[in-house]
Length: 343
Image (cartoon, rainbow, N blue to C red; front, side, top):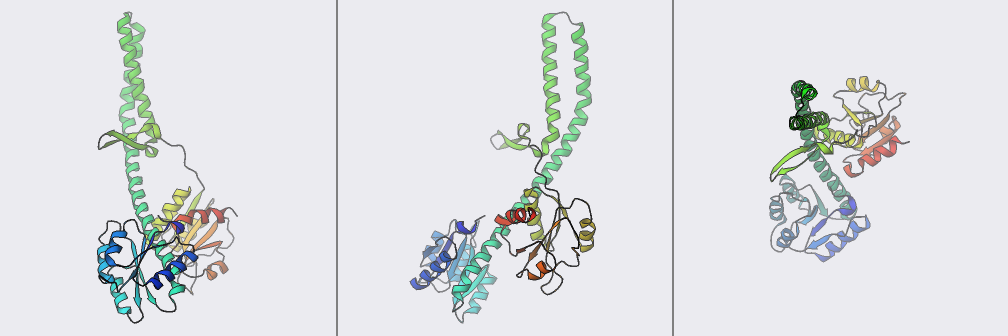
């Protein structure tokens, strides 16, 4: 996930004046100096590892839409912002249909819009990466839940016969006189003890990592079980967009909150009245309408954070402690939440 000062930008334009202008505007706004090429073929050669491509349509060797088509075949394609001359908006619309993230027109607004569009594309790209991480995290949670259930089964099925075997060995040790037989029984006792200890350690199997057992085969490493994760208390999440909700839940879970998903305003209001709620994160309603979708913040002990598509003035006026503008930056989300909840 590229932060603002790590963003790798490629400018594809054969007009040196436009390249100088875009470079100056982006670096003045805090972005790293971009790489620039003049042709479509050079763009394809330089595109590996690039995050955002500012792509002119009219290039010496091919059209920008052709370059876009090739870029989209990458396993991890860059985000493309199409740049057209004034009057070529139909070309830009075609580019959007073929996977461009946004477009810019070479007119008086270009200088103002370039850093805004690049930052919005960066955040959207980061949110997609966070969504993919959320999906992987969900799979990991399901896997570890299954492992936890298996560990309960193992303890239940193994402990009783194991305890019986250990008791039988103790009785035999009390009666045996032969030194060799006694040593053999002690070896059996030690082995049974190792089995007992291993079974007991499976109680923490959900927090264990895995390690390579044989080439291509991994096993759970019971020596890496972790202690309790940081617990910052319950956080309620009411976000309408499913993809965005998954990202918010992942980031709050990573920050140490116990996340409770709310599926309606009624559910949110009911949960908000519970003792110990530390944080509520909700997406703002329709601009001009109720920013809290019917929730009455009133007197509360929790911190209320609104995700807003506008300037957030309405949400702040209605009682939000903090607003986060959409699309937000996943790299700074946890820091923003931590800062506002420390007040």
